[in-house]
Length: 174
Image 1 (cartoon, helix red, strand yellow):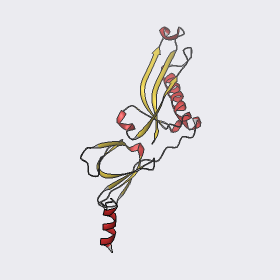
Image 2 (spheres, one colour):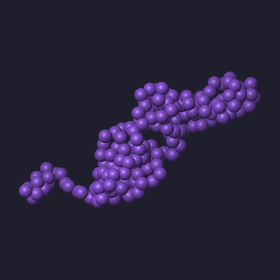
Image 3 (tube, rainbow, N blue to C red):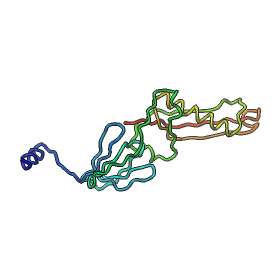
Image 4 (cartoon, rainbow, N blue to C red):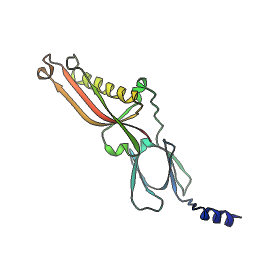
């Protein structure tokens, strides 16, 4: 009976590889291959039948099931952003490899007004909050920071305040 089942799988182009690792993405996709290493923010793997190493963000991965042992390793919880009110859930990345496997969205911006009474530190926090709110409003739980500028002193707005501008690209699950 097992031979007939295996023969049927071969005839229909399906193969059984119990040694393959499975990477379960938050998008619902499952990747079959070999996990080479798990790093702080990424998972490095090879697809079945290929030698090229690929990298995926841990934030795109729910869990990995190792084929040889059957052990399951949880990676990250899915971040659900339903609107601007969820802005505190948004994560900002400065390293491009951390967004591998996520879907690129629109550019987002956060800035303080040209005339304000913020110190450099509070202005920076307010600009970051506005950046996260813009991403959350668009349903994007991740931002890849592309610009982080601040001007301080009388030369910036004539009142001695500071202006902070932050820009990034939003990302979501595929």
